[in-house]
Each structure stands twice: as C-alpha cells, then as structure tokens.
Amino acid sequence: MLDGTIKRAAGLGRPLVLRSARPGVRLRVTPLSFVDPAPGSTYFQPIAINRFVAIRVELVNVGSALYVDTTSNGARIDAGSRLRRALILDAAEPGLSRPQLRPGQRKTGSLSFEIPKSARVQSFRLTLDSGFGPETGVWTFSR
Image 1 (cartoon, one colour):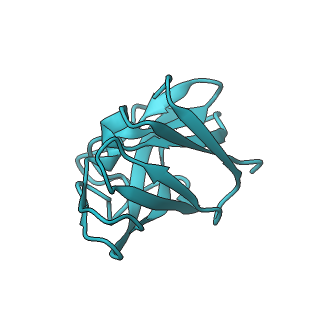
Image 2 (cartoon, rainbow, N blue to C red):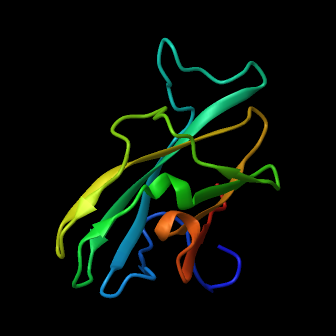
C-alpha cells in the first residue's frame, strides 16, 4: 500500500481504475456516498466515544480476468488525521464482503469503519490484492 503508484481523485462519484498484481485484473472503483452514522446492528455497535461510518462504492471489472479479493482488507479512511482500517463486519448493508467479478460485472456495497464521534472523514484509500497491489486509489473529501 505504500510502495506502489498512487492515483488521486476528489470527491464522491469520481472513478479511478486500479490494477492488480494479477495479470488482466483491473477494477474501476467509484465511491458513491457516505452512510454517517452507519447503523450497525443489535449485536454490533461502536464503543461509546466512536461511531460507525460506511462508504458505498461501486466496483466494475474492466479487465480481462476474474476479480476475487476481500476488498475491505485494502480499504482505509483518514479520519481525525489517522488512517483507519475497514471493519470485517458490515455496519451498513449490503457490504462488499468478497466479490467475485467476471470481466464487465459490477457490484455495489459498503465498506464500514469505526471512527471517533468528533472525527471528519478526509479521504478514502483502496489498494487491491488485500492492500498489496501495485496501485492505490485515494479520494479526498471536503464534507
């Protein structure tokens, strides 16, 4: 996530195409909206000083090979000047879980994070291959 190419976009609705280390895997990633606060569930809630947020993203396989990855492993947000990893549980449905996309297929879902109640989401980062891919997309927000 630190050594590869960084691609940048500003705001929601701005797509970036990211390459995987696997031949033929290219994914168009578009952050669509925030769920803030994200609801969680009866059994899954943040600690008292935090809140859940989720970012809805659209993934489109624009490559020539099957995309299979646990997308949340390579997802981070910058909130309160600190990078935070995505949660493995979904605070907003539907989650992305482990998409399997053939060329031309798309999936929309949420990536969830736990952040301090007072923090503002400043950016979203995604690197394919569970965070070890050659390119990282960075979207900045002024919300």
